[in-house]
Image (cartoon, rainbow, N blue to C red; front, side, top):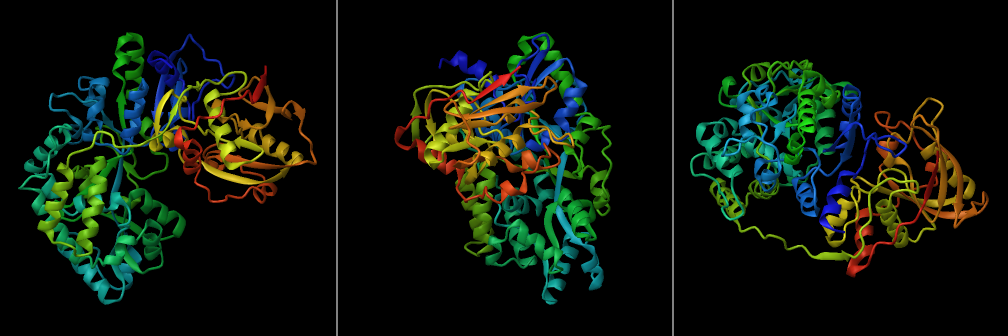
Amino acid sequence: MKRRIFAVLLILVMLLGITSCSGQKDHDKIEITMYLWDKSMTQEFTPWLEQKFPDIEFTFVVGYNTMDFYADLNERGSLPDIITCRRFSLNDASHMSDLLMDLSETNVVGSFYDTYIENNREPGGAIRWLPMCAEVDGYIANVNLFEQYGISLPTNYAEFAEACRQFDALGLYGYVNDYSEDYSCMEALQGCAIPELMKMDGIMWRTKYESETINDQVGLDRKVWPVVFDKFEQYIKDTMIKPEDIEMNFETMKSELVEGKAAIMRGTASDCAVLRKQEGLNTVMLPYFGETEEDNWLLTYPNCQVAVNKSVAQDQKKNDVVIQVLEAMFSEEGQRHIAVDNAVLSYNKNVNIEINDVFSQVKDCINRNHLYMRLASTEMFAVSKNVAHKMICDEYDANGAYQDFNAQLTAKKDSDTSTYITTQETGYEYVFGENGIPAASAVLNTLRRQCGSEIAIGYSSVVTSPVFEGNYTSQQLNWLVANRVVMRSGQLTGGEVKTLMEWLVNVKEDGSNPIRHDNLIPVTSGMEYKLIDNGDKTFTLDKITINGKQLEDNAVYSVAMFGDDSYIEAPAYCNCPMPEELRAKMEIPGINVYTLFNTALEGGEQLEKPTEYVTVLR
């Protein structure tokens, strides 16, 4: 396909696109495409936004939560109008700077506390990314355990270290962290030294680092970061971390707290609230401690960062509407809908999200705006885990850790060493028409070819973009297939296949609709079917055929299913749980769908051609 065609097609990408269920757009409306960092944004936020702006034709796309994904979209030919991403740093986003709108003079920017918006300011003064409400990371304390052993909740670092020693003497963990995760290592390293990182030297270094280029790598400074590693070295000793703790994951860490084996765990305020609600624990948040209470900080990271495609400014009417959407997103009401039930704070002035009870011990931090925004470039995640693990395993001291961390940050970055899995000779559109989505059909036909089933069904979105002509690495193939797709397989009779399709199509007695969005109209391979459009954004299954012949009720077929269970079944989404008699037959074999897809295309193999798998009867 030509590049100009790519630009048109990519706007039509829908992982969870909320459009007219007839597949037809209202061209009198202004069209806005927004990529979502996670499907959680579709719980309350996207319906609220549609209701608030009835004159806008929204296309919402759940993409991948990484800046590399957006870099690939840009290289393929286009970016959406509004972008959201959680795993973000200005450093990672620098390659997109010229493609994004400068928002520094908008009223939206004026609504932020200066401390937080400055983290996103480029050296020239432009601000292209805006931080959504703050997820709060710190310590979660089991208050009952402190009371049981007569140990006071700490209010500064010395008291925290003493509490850890007292619990250790009792044969309990004073503090546990899921060090198997890269983000936990990164947050522990930064969290133990936030006062240093927030000094002028630390802020100046961060600005320089975030502005580095591929030809000018910025290493650690000689003032702030040696102190950070000294503090982390002491932190390791004071929290009695052992080498085996680098294998601890979140569930194990959580179990230690719930079972009364640990007094404090690393976690978010939302985790703290869940522990209260689901486990009945008396938990509160504690900060990352400084030498005094005035030096305590909460580590935060935005629920997501938001940017606008620079091309929006070419249409003044669209530009004005997009700014109105941004203002709505960052309003108190908008942030409440994005946060859903999470215990979050806001980076914006005059936005009063109700302070959850879990924050009772950290109100001073909140009142002083001691909300440190973590530095979270892609390389920071990886290098922090590598170096933190080596320090915990006593492979070197603070100075050795500093030297190694600095060497990894400044190592020459290879532009692209990836190997191409295939070169796709034919591109396929992601446009829902009368007979389905060609790109989705091509992917599902290829998956069926590889797994060898007679019938394959994509029961929720399995594709995130058009299939482009050109080279594909393994990572690019993974990005083509939707996030969290799982495979189920089993032997079903024709009658059971019909029941399965009715589950995926028909509205249930309680009103639950499994086809909330166009791209949830099932994609099938080895089987065709017809739908009746009821005219009210619902459908009814009409007829199923195989190669044009009626499906036989008593015949047995091998069936593979691909999709995201939670999106179809969870009450927060479609609220359509799979019938139990089918669940018993459609088991999860443990096959990695992404590996399956890559294997199908190794050595330059082509995607199967799309087929006309569905007919919509209007």
